[in-house]
Length: 83
Length: 162
Image 1 (cartoon, helix red, strand yellow):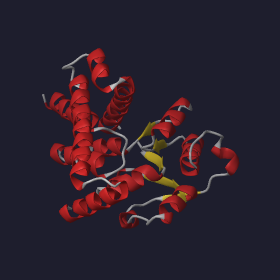
Image 2 (tube, chains in turn orange, red):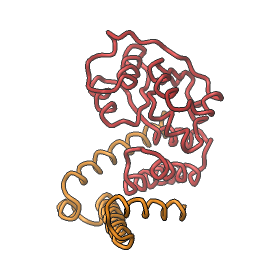
Image 3 (cartoon, rainbow over the protein chains, first blue to last red):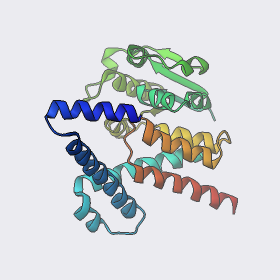
């Protein structure tokens, strides 16, 4: 995995003409953004923050998508436990 | 009660990716449209499918309808409607289309929950597989939603044991 990451960083750096340090920085930013969105959605779905606050942090589209996903997962779990 | 279902490619691929294709044996009848089989055959047919009993079915083009879905999803929906069986899909658009047509539709998460309910997986194993579905496959759900699903599974289990 470590070797694969190094190879990819090198390939991206060459393809984008950026230093590898910049590639790492951008990867960290994107990764953190994803983890932050997961945290916000988890807090929202867990009732720890309200819908408006969640929308403020991650946008309406992602909140609505999470709501739809949650509805589906709940339907599936309910069906599986009762089929 | 007989549990019969037709699957599109999604659950076959996703369950194979987490080494859980055998969970499909929970269904008394499992149908796979030829179109769907051809789709998974174009990649590599998951080896675990050999251990699952299923019936390949043909679908007339006329039955597939005109919805904006891929051929496998359309075929699976057509079979579900024609034979009045559960549709197994992990595709949001296919799910919505099938639901609008009155089809009972569920996905890989539901199959894991079913295996847990039937005693083939304990709560920890079911939770691990749900997380694997989210992390190791292209399933649509985000991390937060999977955790809510696991919580729901745990809560239901707790309520039943009280």
